[in-house]
Length: 323
Image (cartoon, rainbow, N blue to C red; front, side, top):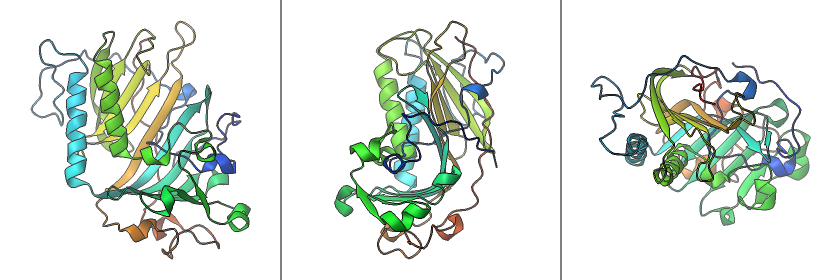
């Protein structure tokens, strides 16, 4: 398992207080903070001609915007999930920059059911958050989160109900729990890319034979060389799983503050140990009636709630040399 170093937590992150803990959400983090960005060899230029043996066709049609092949693949991924993926479990890792400060990395076990949209989270790392449980089921509990803290707070505070978009739940978070998951991530990437097709200054490269936690992936890297109000990030990386055809890692980097400097990480989300179509039912997410979760005596082990061992290794690809 990758070591999780504990840094001095910036005030804006609030990752270990009651108010902070309760909101964690959108899509996970890989393994990169600013000091860990690696520089690979210069990638081959894109677009390339279609490769019949490649898992994806990123060929760019004459005259179209360089983001269009990425949009097509992401739309196919979204359709594939809607047609073939009812639920999944995974290890979800995230890291986010809040109010200009890069927060500590968090790792959790995630169970997700698409219809009705249901989420269960069991925190695994860092150590002082391990054991926290969070559940959300659309249409139940007044559409509120149910939270049971870790450690001594577990018995003292009991189950708490919070507005997922309220001030307490959103403190130190970029996204509410209603935005968590691979499908929501993919839909957001499509929407962002479609908006950016209205502008130029966009370089897109495709990197085959990448590896995320032992899974063969294809990396699409999008670079906006010049900071503009219309662009969310300087460098965006999306790793599509070659077999499952869905994004399993996403990260975004901001423009360097100084010329020639390393681009600072803005967000990073990773979904690993992914298991689809487990047959989850609403009971799996029921904080009141599922005897395996939300017990005041202590948090369950991952294998008690339908998960396997949580392992996260460092992603193998680096950021393009474009500063």
